[in-house]
Length: 410
Image (cartoon, rainbow, N blue to C red; front, side, top):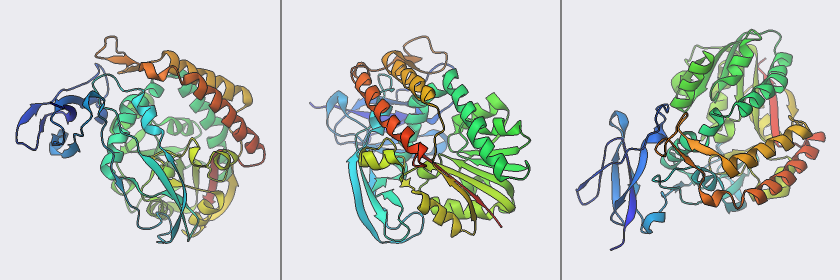
């Protein structure tokens, strides 16, 4: 008889036959209560739809497909009816390629956690504003599952990596904060959207900014509050920002490309800017040399990047929401030495890293990288060195991989 894996979380999994299967709980000792850490696998009959009882009375359904022990969690796609920035229904095919994010996440999953299946990223260009976006894209349930695994396993290593945190802090101090201080006449109230663990809030506080952050992931928000003592609200913008709140500065660093409703977010945030307030938006640069060279194989074309902005597209979206453009830049953030050092660190992580719960010392607490991760690490490293050089040279001419637009409310 064929068998496949079903998935359960913090409770019981009920098969379509009405039988109840005990859920297997996987949790690293000392880990924060991240949503992903309770998912585990159990053998279930093929073709069964499993109703999973989640925490706080919620539930979700997963499909157990045939495939034995290598069965992957199905990811569902949903069509996009209109441009997520301007609302135009007109769009033309742009490019298409296999997604690489699932591979990256699966590399860090410990034994017993079902991996994600592969999807294809199909991109279209809006006939109205020129935005490039995924269509179809992962539906809300699949995106939620992907982020749970990303934050719970793959991204967790960043919070354990003091070197990465130090480099991130330096980037915030030397570039992001300097850009903010040049644009704003004086420090005031700050809203950092997609603030992660709150590093930028902590950096800005030392310059006199009174900051509030918004973060989607509860565990990441809790980690930031504990580590830096900053105010981080967890939830969507509509849930966390009051109608009467106004800010002297709003920052969106590597957030907007993840949003399912970037146009709505920009409209809401523009309305929350105080008169004379500034907005800083950083996104991957669809108009950069690296993006143009690699096309659909560009490192930023992944299934949780839903929108891709060129400079004129992002600037146009801000203007339509009543903001004046102060600057548009896509230069280099790092020196050549910082790039090379970062690549060596990346290679070392993939050849010998241990991942799992912080402080884990037993197999239940952490797991080494899967054997399949090491053989291809060197070739991926050499390829990344090459494409980074394209980006670095492009940055000399304002065609770098990261786009920063500064806008002001009159």
